[in-house]
Length: 198
Length: 198
DNA sequence: TAGGATATGGAGGCAGCCTCCGCTTTTCAA
DNA sequence: TTGAAAAGCGGAGGCTGCCTCCATATCCTA
Image 1 (cartoon, each protein chain N blue to C red):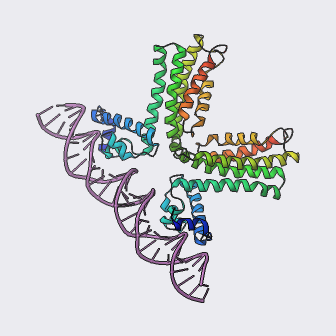
Image 2: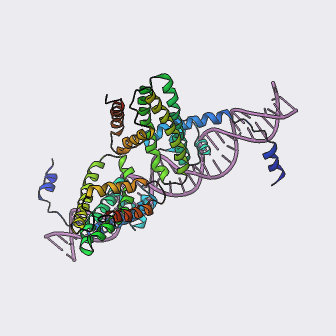
């Protein structure tokens, strides 16, 4: 190891990241989110850079591969979904919080639907899913526990039941109108969750 | 309608399709099958044409879109799987025929796995799936009935049970070693099917 | 405010998509 | 068998997207 390298490692005081860099990163994620939702995982990266008003080189520095960008979008989606749980619980009654959260999760499934096949073709999928699974389950547990405690839903369900139901919702992925159908099913499910039927 | 057109429709003795055309079509399907299995649904069409030793123009005439080619490969796969059932039943004992057929179906799932996401992004999926579902169910029914009749498997199962099990097998699609795992599960399942446990 | 670290963006080279049309092969009627 | 028309072939060419590279611009720290 050379002298400079050693110095780099030992003495470098970590600079604050540049403001424009962070801003461009955000723009890219937002543009990518929209593009992937609209065009699928094969959306043109040059088009994404254009719509983020950023050079193609900038896109590639932040996200060296398509998968990196896909992953960033997915991660963001998961984080937002997880963060929504406590916010919803603070804002409304537990039952409505749960219902609203389930609705939000339909968007999450839309993202996952796009990303899963792309991710499947690569290594590194495990870590991403493991992290996201934990966040989702945690959020769900909060919501279900509160709703059970308040007596607004039956007490013999837990987060894993709803998780399974969500997977079921997403099973009809390939159909054209699946999102509308999934939303309808959320309502039905929520009605079914009320103590002693309605 | 013009005079020529009328004549075309009424009096034209249908020419035999050209031999080279049929041959090239077969070559293309075979090359595409290999390429899609190896590279996924995004395999290069020019590469497929090259490996079929056919011009790119020929590929496009036979299969105007990537989806058409994908569909032809899938349809072929389904037909072969369905045709394998009676052949296996003629060749070996019903239990072994069923086991072998289940193993073959892992390859079919591999094809479906590649094609489903591509098909999902388009219209026209319904007809394809409807036709394939019927063929598969028919083949399975034959195999199960014969194995039950001969007393080689328990009598309280039917084709739809196995179909469901197959879907379950394919559930872990995204994992890297899913094919090996699926094959192992086939064996376990077959053991479980023996009358009174083994 | 200067100077260096950091980030930008787009030109350019490459590959894949798809169309178009001049040329070749096959079929069929005589 | 032959010859002409139908059918099919194939690849050049135009276009778009992928990704790299580096001269230039911007930001952070002192």
